[in-house]
Image (cartoon, rainbow, N blue to C red; front, side, top):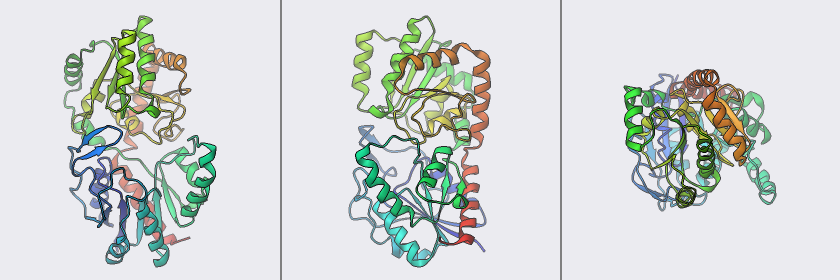
Length: 398
């Protein structure tokens, strides 16, 4: 008998669509994905990219889905904006054995939690929340109360790394109801998009004005204050002034662009490229043209750029505030990751020089990244999800 599995998600997400397709291919799972709105499917204004975004990869192919009625299209996917009052009716019609929600920061997810409790169906939580994030004192107490209240209605969760596991445990989920999962990447699509890496690498570098022999550090994401892209620019510039052929490649866009450009003009920086927004079908070429990924954030739950870059053998230089650091996570200290103290530019400079100059270290970390990336693929994620849901169905609600 097939497992009837319902997934509730805010909108079609470019990283999750391949995952849904892989789950749908499993013969033992009858999957239906319920979307709260159509963000991503049609162009929307991303408040952090500060531009219209429409993903150029298939978002709805290969799996069963349904769009839930919503009063108005959300502008920021806030808690009160993502509210689908008839989600319970939709679940009644599908009659799932297990229901999965993504986090607790949408009103619809709380409606789903009420439905699963009323109908005695297990609720599975999936999130990238992590225990390492620093919470201001004024926010900590109310968060403890609200999140713990929601977790009392959760019957099990996938954990996507060491910090995520500790987060679920902190809010009261027992270890036997925590299942290993993956924050998935479509590894096959990424690698398949680059048929000749050396040719792509040379062509892209030439087009961007980057020397063929440069050591390129790729920042990929939104130029927003908490991601601290200027830290990478400043550190790479200092390393370059010390005589190393190091470049920073900033793939993305956002409100910090002006500050970055002003710094580059004032300091005479000549080893930084700001690409602007790059869509999914082109992103693999930028990984192929780089030598390492840099994640400089003061807070970042579980950035997929680490796993995506790892598919191309890129080690990561990463701030100690990022949630994917751990012995069994995607950024493993001294295995494929060099960890530094967030905001300490001297440490960041030393990390860059170390990875750039120590060829043996780089080779070992590059090989480790490839191996780690294989464990983050959508196929692995689909099997992990199916196995966890089947166990949770047998366990039943708490």
